[in-house]
Image (cartoon, rainbow, N blue to C red; front, side, top):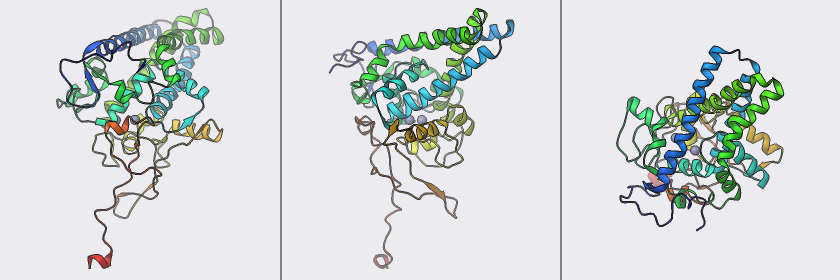
Length: 365
Ligand SMILES: [Zn+2]
Ligand SMILES: [Zn+2]
């Protein structure tokens, strides 16, 4: 099979030790490539952010630098939440070819490896959430060893980027490795890193300021912005699996955390998301602000996207339990890796199980 990944993980690669879970590869060229890629991205973001701190303390920065930060933050928040996550990982809506490219490029501007890698990794997270095989759980490491406290947080946040496991593209990359927009984004990802961290800030500085604003805008609107937002996305994996509330018993530790949801444009409603991964909306109740969900609804009204997947509606009964009040179009299914890696991104909707063998009053009499 011609995969964009064959340049990194040859198909004849045989690991010395097999991982206990399906579709997880130990060692080899892909693990080396992963560590190198994230090492370069993270190191440049950290060094650039330290530069941004120095610059803010020693130079006069103002609205040119910080408006670049804010507008770029909005774009990559949409790129990650709608692009990497809801569209490419979960196929929560359908769209046209130009939109697929636009969404993929917006995602790449967040500088979090390629859409291909991000989406495949995230599918694996859903397949094994907080069990052996999950790549970034604060409760078990990549090999299933239990963790807690700060160590768990640190590994779920950034540590997992440098462990020795990778996701098998032939399992989790289905529907991605033969998508032309995904392959384009994968091959050109370093170009978009340069555009996001340097190109756009330079143009922004020259458009709204002067040559004097260039360095500050690169440091604040380029490097610090991508690092700040990377922490929020990784925060969903770490903080979002440790702190917050759980409306649904999903079997994993994903939680709803309102402030993280606000900052990530919705993805912080992470318990809702683990309950209904394929929904284009992470907010389930009207008061659960989900900015990326509103943007998808706007795009739907404009005719830019269609077949938008929606979680069912819930309400609280007299006993204080959350009950599903509408049915799903897609029937219940197992949350197995094979299902999650189906070409459609997996039938990731699961209906509420019917109440334990409801018996007709006459039958049970
Ligand atoms: Zn999760
Ligand atoms: Zn997800």
